[in-house]
Image 1: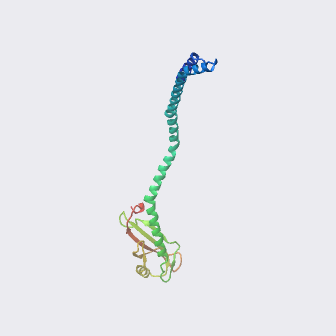
Image 2: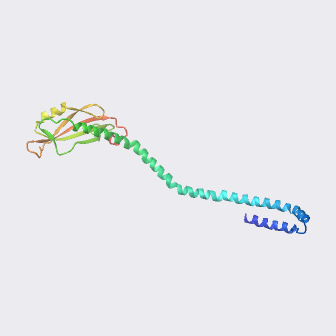
Image 3: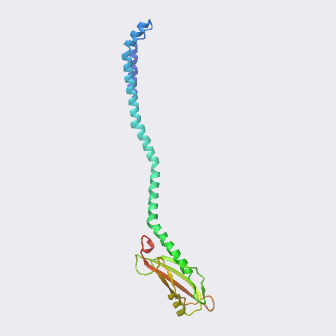
Length: 213
């Protein structure tokens, strides 16, 4: 483009020297102007070619460089967006089923803790404990278990019969009875023995809760 501009300037200078300005009279200026008309046409054509050559160079060189710079600057955003999509997909696929089962378990714990105690029985030294996952049988099902720690003076058979006859609503409406496990080592309180009462509501669909597989 620089060589084209140099040759254009040289050609225009020769054209102007060949047709110098008149300056003698109005008629001579008019005649010279008419004779220099080809120089003006050539000048317009050359300027037009130089301008479009420069425009093409800007479009083919400067714009791709800017675009590549923008692309290099933008790749962390797209990588972060992809990682965010992976995290959201993981949460929707695996964590949401866990949260749903945890909510079911929490309501099951509330119902068990509200069940009346038998006579001569009181809460033990541990709070109500609940767990969801594989508690019995083979894989691919969900078990919901809630355990009560109690202190009682009742005979083993009597407290066992009490909780066998006492049923609590499970996670999906099914009634569940309790099973009593007596601590053979007794209790820290004189006259009492420590027992664990378990309410097990099992064999529910596992879904995508990894604890049930």
